[in-house]
Length: 129
Length: 176
Image (cartoon, rainbow over all chains, first blue to last red; front, side):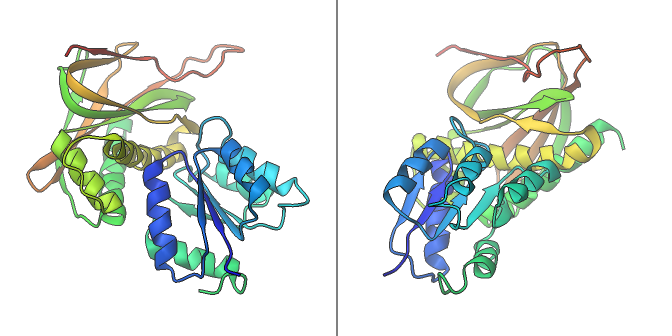
């Protein structure tokens, strides 16, 4: 069965762009779930088991680093690769995300090729491109 | 390079990069000015984002409703003939990316800075003001015959023992 992907960003514009980019990569994806913040994303994870999570850092309610910590702290979810996609390009935030277990990092603005390249290194063969 | 010139260079680079990457558009660099005191009234779409750290301030982007719709159309590949939630969201994200890139570049010189979530205002004849008589660097970016105005204001935070870091208060009056 084709896997699901979860996109987490408080911007509906970015969620829409990532939906389009993910479909353009040619990855075999069944459903792309969307969440507007970390709390909403955790609710989705309780119901679905995506093969990949793409998340922003700077979000209301629960930010991307808190969400990442919750995912990596859970036995059920810790193996799901989480890729950070954010404007927060400073070394401190990147370092914190890597320390918490982020699988990768893409800085906004991004191109479709940058996303595809990043995901290829992380997902093969779970989500063949 | 002083902070003014550095900020202008960062804004120009970030603007060109965001438009080229996310919209597939090459923009022209426009004039630069400095705004002190009470700014003129605004019409159209304005998106504001706060910066906080050892330096406090804010960044903003202002454009006409038609340019906001055009930005949205290129970014999301959907047509919008009037300013709606999707258009406001696209302008907010554009602000997040431009001011966020400027913030990351400036952090090398000013130390860590926090970035707030953008707030977007759409209306006519509204004024904005940042507390503390701050000076705004104003950079114009041109897309064909339309102009996107990017503003940045930063002031060194006074060192107060045990003081919490707050983003500069920003007020907005709306007179419709």
